Length: 270
Image (cartoon, rainbow, N blue to C red; front, top):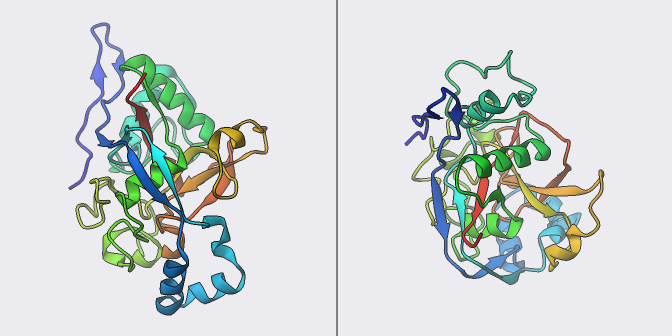
């Protein structure tokens, strides 16, 4: 099911408002964060790449596995698309993503996730949504992102513990670029029905990279121009080993890439 048919909301004076995003509510509760030793052992037995990761202790950034309590929140069913982001540019005159030609994205890519956007750009989009709609829109914390991807348990991929190249857009899929959001739905969806949380594009979060278990509030206090923010989900450009639900990569706020986009969150208590 491709989520590409939504149109911008036109105002009475001829302007364009935001496209109403499709949101999924994630209930309040305790959620498992991080990868366990048993899961590392499972990957070691079943994935060739995991041997090097174990030897170099590359799973350490995802450990120890721990529990966090999250208030209920909403998450975009899919990453923000080119069409959605175009409405923002048209309404505000904001700068276009690096790979667009003029003021447009590639023909036929309306429903593809927008890429080439920095964290600053993603925050500007959220601010515009809050002005255009009813507020509360923001980037997700990495804990919220992982909770939505795993659905309340500790699965390695949104559908289970074993990789399946037919459920997502990673390097193994051979697409060599983004795919329309929801193209792998419902087989690649998370238990909550969130699409494209494995592959397609990396997604900005609002969390500063730090060791587990960490208090997000403490990490946020030390922010500066070189602060690295967590990105999640892997992408079309990288192997599935980076598209696991627990994988943590990071980038500075100004970084842009043809494999990096974002997904919105929304607070329920404003």
